[in-house]
Image (cartoon, rainbow, N blue to C red; front, side, top):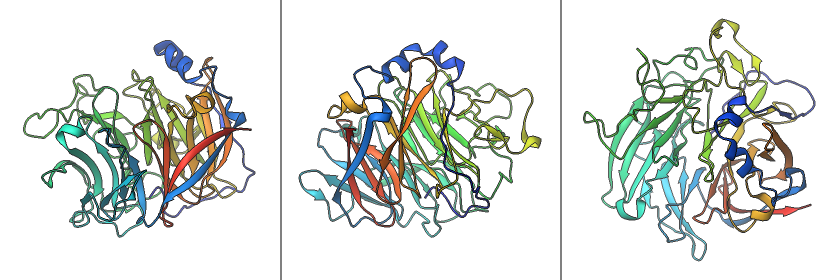
Length: 402
C-alpha cells in the first residue's frame, strides 16, 4: 500500500500547483508535448471521470495489467500474493492464475505483492515479472515467473528489514523493451538512511534492466546506456534517483515518456514527467520534498534536481498520490486522449494533467474515484480500469465532457 502513518499534517486550504516543465522537455522531445496536447481532446477543465463496478471480492488488489495476448483478459495482483484473472465476458475467475502467498510477507500495510508485469512476448513465453516483499527476510525482490511451468527465479533483492514502509514496487516494461522497477527509500521518516541521494544503493530509485538476456549468471543484464554504468561506486541498474516512495509509475504509449507519482513526507504530493532521454534524473528527495527544501544538509550544491510538473498539498484529507496513466484508448480519444489521470488514496480526488505544448501543463480536478483506489490499469485496447484496497472492488473508468 502507498502509505503508513504520517508524522505531520499541514492545516491549509486545498490548492493545486502546476509547475512549468523542465526546459529539457521542449529541447529533447518536442513531439511529446505536442502529441499529448492533441487539439481534438477536451481541455482537462471540461472533463469528468466516472466508474462502473464490474467485479468484487478481491483481497487488497494493488495492480491491473493486460498480458496483451489477444485474449481480452486482465491480470489483477492482490497484496496477499495471488494474481487473479478477469474477462469482460465471464467476470472474475474463481481460482488464481498464480499464487505467491508462501513467498510474500503481506503482514504489514505496505508489504506484500507490490507489482506485476507480463513480458512483452507473454503470449509465447508465459513469463511474468513480479515485485514483492520476501517472506524470509523482508527484502524487496524482483522475480521472473514462468506461469506455464510454475517456476520462480529471483533476479534482484534489496535489503529492507528495518522499516516496513516505503517498499515501492511498481514494475513495467518501457517502449525500449527494458524492465523498470521502483524501490522506496527504505522507510522511516525523513530518509534516515539518506538513500535518496546515494548511488551505492537501490533504495529510493527506479531501476532499468534488460531481462531478455543474462549476464554473468544474473538472469538479467544492465543496458549499456544506463546513466551510471561508468560511475565508480554506483549501482549500474539505477535509472532515476531521488525518490521517496514511487508507488506507481507508467509509460505513455505514444512517446515513451515516464510519469511518476512519488508519495510525499508531510507537506506535498508530486508527479514527475521525464522524457526517454532523461535517464539519470535526480528528483530531489530527500534534499527536497517536491518543490521545497526539506533537509538542507542532504542537498548537493552541484546537483541538478528535476522538479515535479504537478503537486498538491497534504491538506483537506489528502494523504498519498496514486500515480496513474495517460489515456490512449479509442473510446474516449476525442475527450481524454493524452490526459494523464492521477488520484489521491484518501480523498479519492482525481486530477487530469496534459502538456500544453508550450512547456507547461494544464491540470484540473476531474471528479472522484470510489474509496481507496490503489491502481489504474489498461486493457489491451488502452481502456482504463481501477481497483480499490479494502473494499476489493474492480471498476471500468469512463470519461465525459461537462
